[in-house]
Length: 140
Image (tube, rainbow, N blue to C red):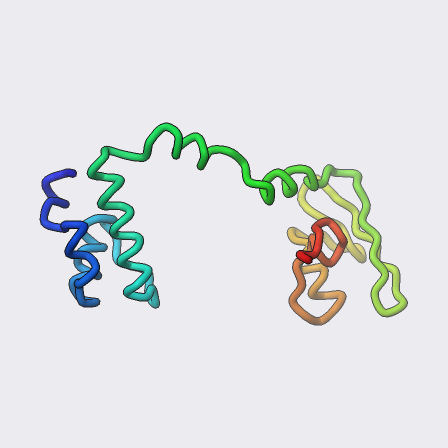
């Protein structure tokens, strides 16, 4: 543990009031705590970070585990679209065709940076673009 953090003891975090937690957060992370973060979550983050710093970082095993792609990341990587691709979706009896371009997407003669913006334009509601165009599986 560095000298600056010796004042923050793991066993004290559980009984700290909000103001003390905010001060401890600023000392440990060198940035103000995110607005709206509950005391419970502040305690968890602080306790974890104090322990990590006491051990001079994460174990190699933890670092390797964090470096591995998750299933979600692997699925996302598999659905990367390449320029020249085409997405087709029917919505309320109208077929919409979106072309994948170098800069993003082309739909109805306009360039778009996001599929979600196109999905919102088509439906009038906020949608995940990849989900709307069938690029992701719906959680069961």
